[in-house]
Length: 93
Image (tube, rainbow, N blue to C red; front, side, top):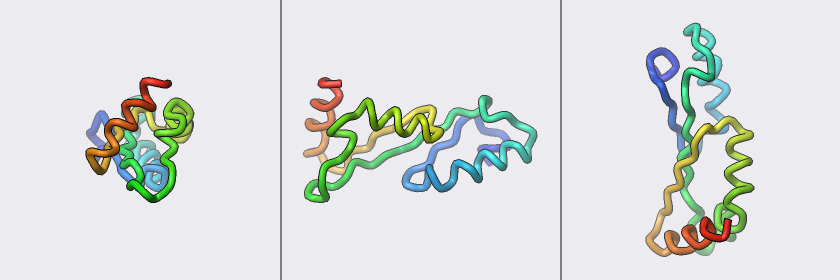
């Protein structure tokens, strides 16, 4: 549906997997990729699961997602305890 009539497409964990399918659907509907903004919604890693790249180097991680086709990235902390470390990482960037 987004390929046919939307002006944006959002995906969570499936962004990297589904982007080529979405782009194929755009072509099939006669639309250009530049007509539609893409949004990758990212959930931060749970505490205790290791370092999250968004906390280590948020600008590098953003560049990685943009290179992978995301026009925009939405960061979604899973727990309140993740908010301050994310804000600190963004302030360092």
